[in-house]
Length: 289
Image (cartoon, rainbow, N blue to C red):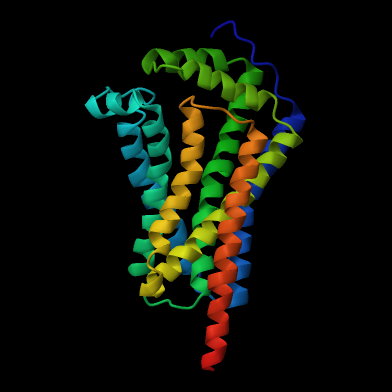
């Protein structure tokens, strides 16, 4: 990669990445504070939502998923299970979606049944969703954009190629060079449209996580609605599995089409949970007053 030209990152791109990182880290906190103050909710519910994502999605899910599905990409030795899965693209794509579906929705379930078991007020469901989705925004967008800024500085001072060659020599992985090249091209071409699409995508994701948190909350609150827990796993699996099938090369849709599909499912999940569970809960409370 010594002779590869990654271009030049403009001042405007650095400014946009800085704004994006700042907003991704600060706005979730502001939203959480305003929500908790307005609804008189314990802020610890938001923190538990964030911890749920960290424990179940980052600490538990990702390592297991990498070992089972992505061993080669992570520089790990292949094994019988990974060979079997990689030879079956449909199964591979399904598991890409099933892991986050199972772990994240189970994380919500465990949180509601343990640390939040005494918090039965309906606002708890949204508070947990804000914490879960907001922390994901901080990690995926905030920290990624900070790393983009660091890579941009290295591109401009010409040190990026040498650093990448060292990385490829110490941890060579199939497709790693192509992945890095694609990322660096994103950094060098970062513009207002890229930031806009990123913001829209994360807003949609937060709405989904909030809706899913509502579903699982009522699955825990009412035994008759327990089916909402496995239903949330199915929805999550379908969304991420749909992208997994494309990663497996079975078909490919343009990014805008994937965003429309993801947005539709996310809005349906959020408004479905809000209208048929959250708002209905308010009516039930009013009847008992």
